Length: 305
Length: 198
Image 1: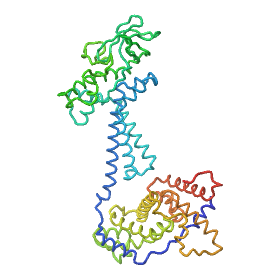
Image 2: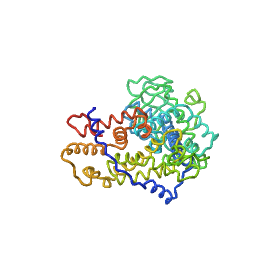
Image 3: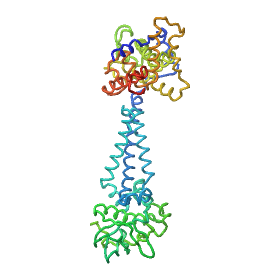
Image 4: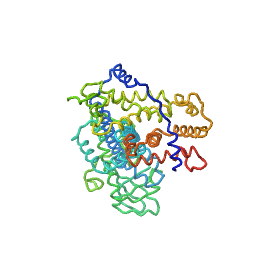
């Protein structure tokens, strides 16, 4: 090591001397270019602008990722994963890619600003880690805080009308692409393997449960089921944890309200693209997915769920 | 503000800066004269004896320093601040060269840059070849590593000063020098080293 250090020091090149009038040349250049001493706000402004822009990108990224996480969680898309890869296609179809991509770009922009605008002097890897770490943790924490649910209620009740907020919480149904094979509901009647299921929207449907699956009245179940010869036959069934059912049911009720609001003349100024895609038949399109009237007193609704 | 006594050449850095900020632009010339050779020598070594570019960059450093003079903390030494500007200017140039390799010198040109005649005494040939190899290897490092090594080995700057110039935590300076050293050793004696060049 010492020998290497010696070699390095011996390799130090001797610098030639600058011309004697170098300083005069610099002064001449200052005059020729009309350079002046910049005011402090301009000198430090760029750094502060970088810091503010990085913070703004981070905050926006957090809000957008929160929206994506809220949409994923409340749409019940995660419920599809309980069936492993069988409904993976349906799950992938419900991911709000535009929101995730936006959050990704904002996180990248924040990292770039942190690094290049000298907002904080850290290595690139740290800038990326800080940026995506904060965006991810902040977005998920915000999504879990219950703020989205409050805002959603307020927007649907038209208590809040802020551009952006109103759009997202009012038109969020554009991300709603339910998998026609997936069902989730409460067993309200049983006759052997034949069960009567009530969906979040209040509809009821007869389902033939898979052989060997023991359900009880009052239980929440999730199914892979398709109509077959006039009967809805469940290929797979699972009991649900009541805690995980709540967001799903809540979301579907909200979705119903949202789509009412998205109709021409309603809140949001018209029918969104998803609404047009789904047509007037409403949400889901499947045998249990039709939008029926809400039943406020029904067993599937109300604040207890 | 009243001017300090004596010739401007005898004034302290803080006094000269104060005079420039008070509108006496000519007070900047003694400051340039005081640091020009040190900054030029640093850039000359950092740019591996590319004299013309080092000279142009030295001028750019002093022009930039003049415009940003209000940012100087007059209670602290001026030299690290100037080195920092020099490092940033050189790093920008090196990054541009890395993106446009056709604009940069070929490795074999390095030996000729500082020795236009190419005449080397016989007895120093081996040593000279080794030094050229070191310079070439240094030229292959990314700007931050290269700066850390040049400041440490060629400019004899302390870790504290290097941290201030490169704007990295003090602990990072040790890491940068260690990494740079390993990379150079790997290039110079690949059969002995167990690391890949950076």
